[in-house]
Image 1 (cartoon, helix red, strand yellow):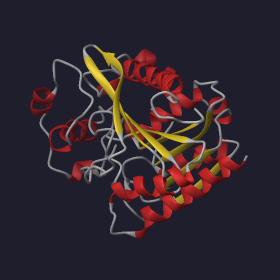
Image 2 (image 1 turned 180 degrees about the vertical axis):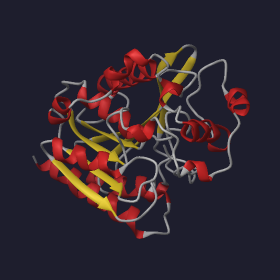
Image 3 (image 1 turned 30 degrees about the horizontal axis):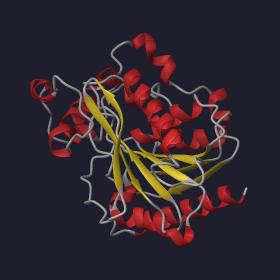
Length: 298
């Protein structure tokens, strides 16, 4: 559910972009950012962006963090998914399962990776998708999950009620929202164009129906306590003052996941790592790297 505009693309001549699947005529792409050769580790981060499932793009991770990961030896694969409401959650997750299969099949030939082991890494709505993928996977090559201000259930009351924080913003008319909905699916949604869809949905308490119109399917997209207990080692971070996704969801996940590393941020906004002028973001990515190093040593 990120609302900040991306900072700009990383100037990496070795990066490469590939189509992993075509959904209703829309090529879904993934961009590979290789690790520094001298320090390459046997884990790749598969990254899913935020944006409330309705906006954003796969390359929204600031350059500074991509460079930190690359210098530490971690390759990064940033992955498209079709956005709501033009695509619904069942189709979104289906496409991402295709992405995982494609990565494992192509990791050696396309990316020259010695190992197809990976960690699912998501921010906000991307972390939610990572939770879903990890919980419904028995893949031995999935070694971990990294959730930045994410959630694992759609049942939290705050997702279905008007949000007090977003109701301090100017009201978005329903007619304007309808004008922004496309007739064909898309995988890149500019913040300036698509954020009002999310804003209106949170102001009215109608966010979940935006990407899951069929209420009977909601249960299938919530993780149970048993599923949380079956997750691989998980890195969790979120702000205690998050006004978008309640911090309690991260706390609850940390309590239920058997091997969980919780790194709270005190008193900052939802997407605290978007502000590169503050030290919190860099500090958390340093902690993420240490956690990844621990996975590599196991």
